[in-house]
Image (cartoon, rainbow, N blue to C red; front, side, top):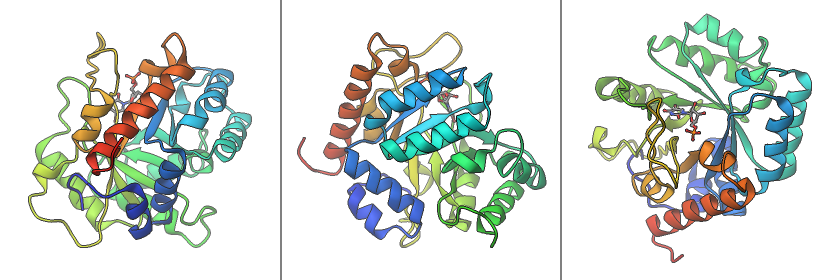
Length: 276
Ligand code: 5BU
């Protein structure tokens, strides 16, 4: 189902065919969190410190490791250790977009070693189906070292003003996800996308919606970012809410992360009809 889900995370986890989705829903239930931190730090120390101090409140830690000026194998090691310590997944917001052969090398190998630490990576289908086929092949290859532990999110919409990731582009994202449920876990989108899916969906499908641009205190920035609150995002279909500056640039990031976690969780309980 790609329409707005009113099922609990535990039910979705029990019913989901993908082991990584089951793990993600388990984490959400265990930590009572649907919060993702957008950890846009520019040095390893700050990145790892944020993962350690805010990790207890997060379901997922979202990175842009190409922002990290001293990124190396110790950053990868640190991220992996902290993901285990605090039981969160890592999502590299790399927005892979190239031809199939190139993205395979960017994802599994290369200077960023994305497959070694990122449970989830997002991609854009601007170049057509090849990227989806290529990455699906990579994670399903017999010698891939993390079977069942890696998957992708399709960038179906963007939060920035004037985004052209709309309409037939977004519909094509859904079509490709439906063809590849063993590797495409869901979407980065601002809402449930149910208007593009008037049909009931295919039996058993359950794509997960991650929503960026979440902020309690601001409506946007002066570079085109547009925000919605945690409760609005979840009410519109976000399964996981992603917040960056709203948390890490606040006066007390630990306290703010807890507030965002609570706001996201309460909105989820309301959506699934459980009391808060
Ligand atoms: P912010 O500090 O909460 O504005 O950070 C937003 C993060 O989400 C940042 O890492 C962006 O690259 C990312 N992002 C986004 O803002 N909008 C989108 O549509 C997508 C990603 Br996809």
